[in-house]
Length: 110
Ligand SMILES: Cc1cc2nc3c(=O)[nH]c(=O)nc-3n(C[C@H](O)[C@H](O)[C@H](O)COP(=O)(O)O)c2cc1C
Image 1 (tube, helix red, strand yellow):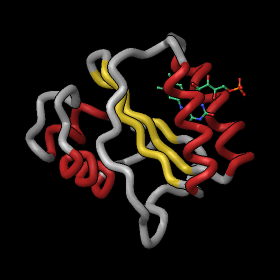
Image 2: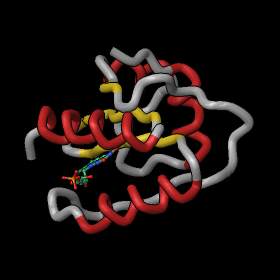
Image 3: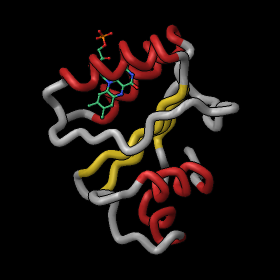
């Protein structure tokens, strides 16, 4: 799976659909946050679910938000290990919704 390819397509599509998002890659796992209008997110999720380049997709949290926390159509988390360190997590494979929200609050996007 080419990360650059995913980022390129995501940036183009998310810009078009006014979706904002960020991605974290860590030890073979991916954590993604997406914000946008319901219909746009539903369409995007169908495309991602159908994508054979990943397995074991789990939705950690899906809820209305008062305002966006992400500005870019798709940014890449620059230093996942140090971000995880800050909340004392060794990896993202068994993340809870609360932990994902905390990461989103303290993230440093590249
Ligand atoms: C981990 C992961 C995250 C992805 N995130 C997005 C995304 O945020 N936006 C997007 O349009 N496609 C994303 N994709 C790609 C979609 O699965 C799909 O290939 C793409 O949306 C198809 O777009 P196209 O029809 O313009 O080629 C992601 C794929 C993977 C594996």
